[in-house]
Length: 459
Image 1 (cartoon, rainbow, N blue to C red):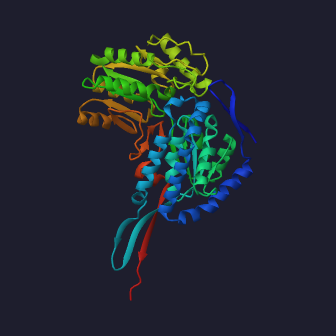
Image 2 (cartoon, helix red, strand yellow):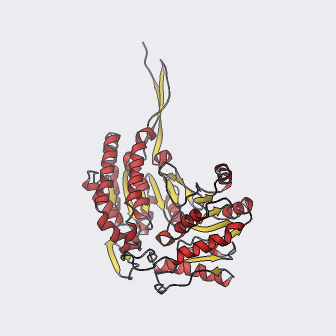
Image 3 (cartoon, rainbow, N blue to C red):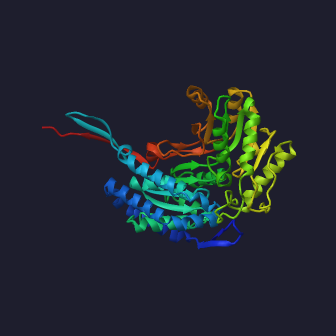
């Protein structure tokens, strides 16, 4: 048994702690999920969806408690109000499309045969959720998996230790059975052992590349399905005809919001050289206006990073870049304590020789480079081991689509960034991972096809 401790980035204190389940107890809990799953799947789809949405609403009713709790656990300022908007939007959309997404595919029927393909639940789905958007990332899989008739085990990151517990309590209060949706406190060894034993039919993991590799190693030889959303180094490209003010506002917000701790945050920006100087000037003005501080203070616009070690990695990347010739445009602020509280930064005179432009930063820093045109921008955008999103800024839809076709990425944005549309598949390529969540395709990943070939008896 291990003690999991959430260390608050506000002051370094222990905010919450929980004991992990021993392996045998964890096996028993998953076995209960498996036993209950078939009865849950037998309920009408409409009933399952209604109960899931009631659970979502129950989470929303807790929002006054959730918002400061998140600030304590991972540092997001209370002024932004938590995650319930996206949490509800994604759940509502997935419930609305469930009947169509899960409908039988009719292949044909005549006097002799009836043939169709049915989507059936995987069984027990294991969701391993991250700390940066702990509610929204979890619900991406939890809601459709339950609606589709799966049982779900949820394991949350230690940094947001209380989120899974709160979600389970809300869903159970709304009528989702305790043996259909369970929050589990597990250490890494127990997690790996359960996966290696084939305890789950599908595992959805959001986290680091190293974590994704650990999941693959644990699942090796079990044929367990895996959905992996891993690292990112998402680019923005501003073309000469872009709305400059809109591009700066959106891309810098995409780089700095949540202290840069966003899966699809903007980590590198390429600007057509004619707009480069005004873009940088406007970006610096915005960032200098941020207020770094205690996330419980309504005046704070930029909270601490979730953990000191995350801030240390960003400091290391920035320091290495400056030593190699990069220009820093923002002076450190007094609130920067050398620990979790980290000053935001904009760097120019950067290159892809620097880790800042190659490795995931996941913090409030962005490098900006001038480019001569589309070909150079494309070469730089694709010069990455990651591929989650790319943000293109132009008034020309056809041009954006043509460039988008050539970018190695999971999602192409035009004139927006850092947003997850539940009607579209959330997916990545290269070392960002495999699989896809939300949309109709999200349902396909947490179900399996089952074919029916029925020969009629005729007299």
